[in-house]
Length: 131
Image (cartoon, rainbow, N blue to C red):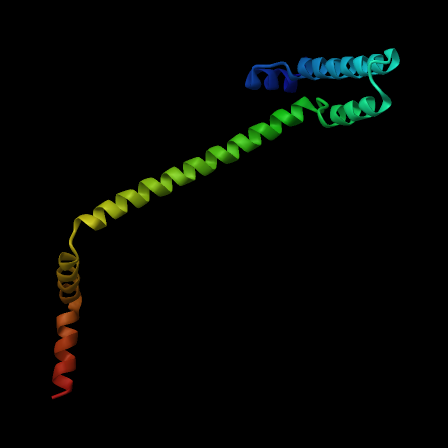
């Protein structure tokens, strides 16, 4: 057992090499059963061909790649859920804060900030210029 195989088995909880061998053996057994059904006359050639076509779609394939693909899909889905949760939390917090203060207070606060930042002097200068 190599280091990578050991790490994969610890992360997934399954020995992927053993699962690959088990899947390949089961695929071979299914193929043998299909051939026996054809040879014994239980199946016609059309049934055998249909079963082979279905079997080719369902072959075990590369177990390690399947686990990696599933992990990638899960990570992407988890990140999307996290991103959506953060958006909802921030949006709800801001909308709650903004929504608690009536628009009249926002207007008064904006005018007070304008005057505090020198808007009164600016307006006085414009009014004196236009006399």
